[in-house]
Image (cartoon, rainbow, N blue to C red; front, side, top):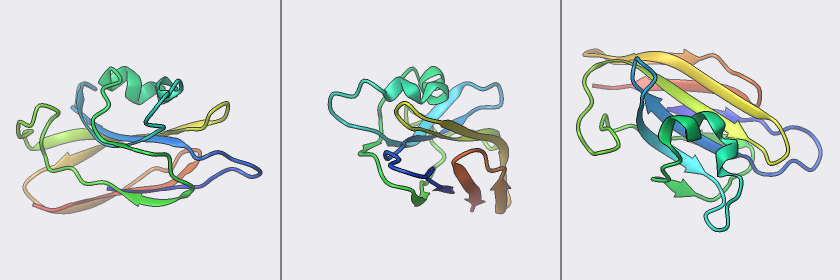
Length: 135
C-alpha cells in the first residue's frame, strides 16, 4: 500500500494519518499505519473515520510526518493476529490537520488468489494511493 499526502499552502502542520483495513461490511480489521502525537494527544479523534471504525485502538504509532509519499504493508492478519480470508476489503487512508482539512480515501480492493495492482481514487490532500497485492 502506498499513498502521497500533499500539504496545503502556508504554514501547514504535519498531518495526522491513519491507514487501515475494513471487511466488506465496513467492520474494522486492522490498523496498518498511524501517525499522530504519541504523548498528550488531544486530536487523535480528528481522524474521525479511523477512530469510529477502530474505536481509537492505537496499535502502530509513529509521530506525525511532513507531506510526502509513504508505504504500509498488510500481512493479511486481523487485529487479533488471525489470518483474514481472501476476498474483498476496504483499504482506507485518512489524513487530518489540526484546525484544518480532512481527507479520506476508502475503496474496495480484492485480495484473492492472483496478484493485482489497484490505483485508488485520490481525495483532498491524499493526492495518490495504490495497492500492490502479491500472493
